[in-house]
Image (cartoon, rainbow, N blue to C red; front, side, top):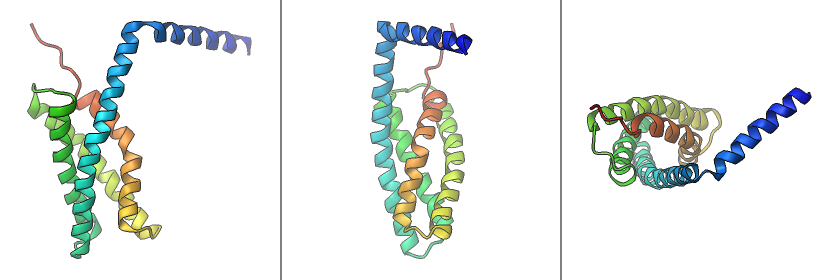
Length: 157
């Protein structure tokens, strides 16, 4: 037990040392800014997503095609806003979009399954189901896009 306690103290001391480092604090502040802005811009895309989903289901389009269509609208809106307003990356746009689409397609499969599960199995209202699904997927989606889609590419000399 003492061995684990000593290791824990060592890790804790290392973390405290890193927190005091000014560069780490600047990086954490910058990352928090990106995360917050990503949340706001994705919320705009999510509003588009929810409105379109509700409209499509109200005109009797089934849940799965409605969710896929509204997710595509969210994908294009969110990517465009985050590319220009948040991460301000103008390089490798096609590659970034391909990455974003790949991640979003995985997200779409999971989100469609969740929405269907919440509506059909749990009997939740459509809008509440869509909202819960968005909340569940927000953090994993941000982390995937931050580390893969909107990362900074090293310049080749």
